[in-house]
Length: 293
Image (cartoon, rainbow, N blue to C red; front, side, top):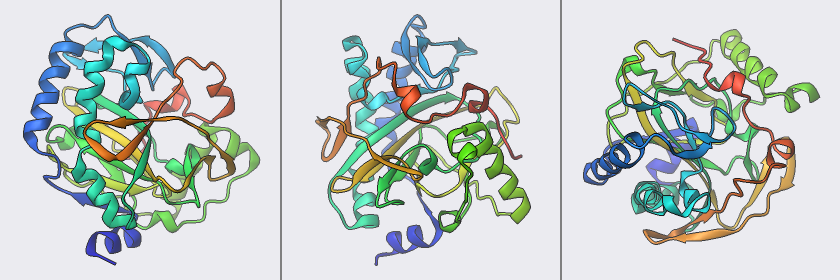
């Protein structure tokens, strides 16, 4: 086992600084500012509203986290260029190289992605509650810093070794994300679990396991942004399932990234009205809630 794989498997996360070249990030930020921030009458899949709607800009920042930007061109072809600018970062070969070191596998499916600008709150949770691999625990997410993250912006945190915790849930907790996330918050406080919120600068990437508890610290100053991508990967030979508590296999189609042949990208049906009924998603009530200082 190499040093990356060893640390990741023991701790449930891994931080690599200066992984994404700053030049690529600066190019993306310029495009994002000129073509998204300055043109606010755009409709995207908004994670905080759990629907496709107009974006909201305030103080020069996008207030809504955007969902599945890796395939946003399938929502509207006018986003094709934006889609490509996102893929230059989230399918960067340096990311798949780290995934290769973690899993000793070459090819991966990207099954979900998000883009954050304003420092939206994220309550403590495990990704496996919402989506996972089969066998469980073989999905890895990556949080990519698009700027130096100020401590007052509400930094991203993980709880080391929490991927090994056995969190027993009742039927009600399995079906209700509000009750699930309340239970995770109480578990952290009861067991006095250690929170790790590393300083992530432009180009830093934090990788974490689907079982690792993570979230964001409380925002101290709303004038600071937390510009970042989040994306989720599964080795291409493994199944993508509903969650750790229901092994229903999610069938999906993929397309290729012109920037990296080792990553296939899941096509999301943005307009499928049955998705919210079939799969658990974070409630709008909980999306902006922050647990810890």
